[in-house]
Amino acid sequence: MDFRFADFEIDIARRELRRGGAIVHIEPQVFDLLVHLIRNRDRIVSKDELIEVIWHGRIVSEAALSSRISAARRALGDSGNDQTLIRTMYKRGFRFVGELDDGVSERVVANDQGRSAPPADDAVNLVPTAEPLPLPDKPSIAVLPFQNMSRDPEQEYFADGLTEDIITGLSRQRWFFVIARNSSFTYKGEAVDVLVMTATPIPRTLVLTYFGDMDISELREKPAGRKPIDTRTIPLGRIDEVVAGVGRALQEGRRIYWVCPLIDESETVDLAAAQDRFQSLQERFGARVGLVHGRLKSADKDRAMDSFAQGETRLLVATTVIEVGVDVPEATVMVIEHAERFGLAQLHQLRGRIGRGAEHSSCLLLYRAPLGETAKARLAIMRETEDGFRIAEEDLKLRGEGDVLGTRQSGMPGFRLARIEQHGKLLQVARDDAALVLARDPKLTSTRGEALRTLLYLFERDEAIRLIRAG
Image (cartoon, rainbow, N blue to C red):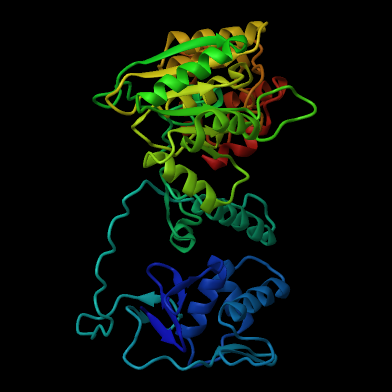
């Protein structure tokens, strides 16, 4: 650790504040403020200096600084009345007055401007070399900070808050190892390369590759040992036959998912509800039936999934909560009730929960007749192929890609002349030409650049000019 005082420890490399070994979550600006005060604990640090260090010379109100000071005190269990660690020096600034533990020093030496510099060759490093942390045994996710594109520094709170909310939400999923927020925030303001991986590209994702917003690499081979999944469509009028077939599969020792579109019965739509289906199947098959849905507490969901994975329950009634992050190779049957109500991406994801082992797998898509043309086309595609790329392309034709520069993830395109599914290959030529223009004239100030600005305006795409600087 770089600093230790009271029962707190600060690790500058990891950008972590710990109390009693537990991480104390603070914002990046609060962390920088606290480190700067500790590094300069032998003097009073003025407000102007803190603003320069934290906001790099941008004009901010004293209220913004006061809020960071208050946040630092709260993180340390200090207060404006006690000021046992951070003391306000009237009309002069602030000073860290806590006592650092003996035998602990910074890994770096502060220079006269308060910035860190490498230690001299003959400097004594009093911090023991830390053992490398063990690698996690699950997929790792790092949520990179959002960039505040406004000129209002107070919006930093909003941008950072979005990142923190996403990190918190992902941390509740036991299937992922989520990188700590302080580690993620070390990349704030820096350009980074981003790798996006998906097994089920939605039309919007597919179109982003067409537009050149990302380069694409395709892995079309299935993992070794995977067998094709037998997919069939069955009308709901034959559900008794399906239940009988599920009973035979249970007798053979198989594990089965049964997916419903709703949790509880609805007064507005006549669709199958997981609670009702669970009760009816439990009456027939007893304790072998389990239930999981999004309203259950995390511990209850984990318990239901563990029971299914270990074979204590063999028929799991669920909603789309099992769509991602579930891997039970012994599961070989998937029943999706009211399949006509699901999108292609969801159906493909749900079907992907089976077929992960060496046994033959079956997916039964139950639908209510009569089917509309779009629903009929979706189910036909699911019968024909398991190729996620083909499914995404067909989905693109059926529901469109939405807005590339907006928020709609579906809907017909805004093109005046082209259609993505028919002219997608021509976009590579357009992309190369656009890259050449931006390389030679990034601000579009040349004669051709001005013509392009006019063209963007005529096609109601001039908003793109404001985003060019974003890369």
